[in-house]
Image (cartoon, rainbow, N blue to C red; front, side):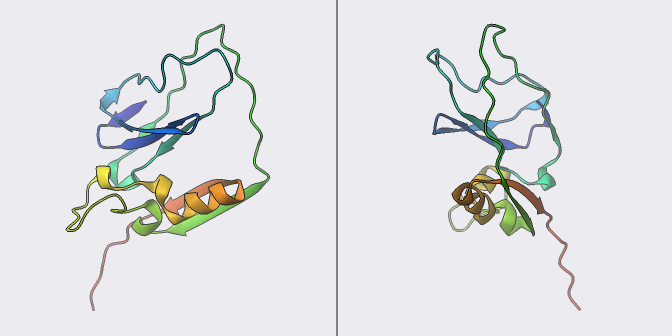
Length: 134
């Protein structure tokens, strides 16, 4: 992935969660190791919102002998349009919580929770609007 070094991803391999902190530049990140020779489920999920910069996913490196079974395509879709709350702003922080990418986890916000419950594909558009006082 290519990143400015401010973003975090939720990595879920066979139901086991870990957090991946990206570094600046184009890097290769191990997502799992020492896996048995059976089918595995992998979910790579960006935790931080667009405010922290763009991430480019450049692909997976998989052993050429590995079998990559197809997965079922969800028949339902869910779109969430919101602000930083929709992105999970501070939902892993403790009071008083300062705004930083490591305390934000979109995976645990209401949209992704609803999508997983419904077995739906999720698309979230979240943008922090500047506050204007009149």
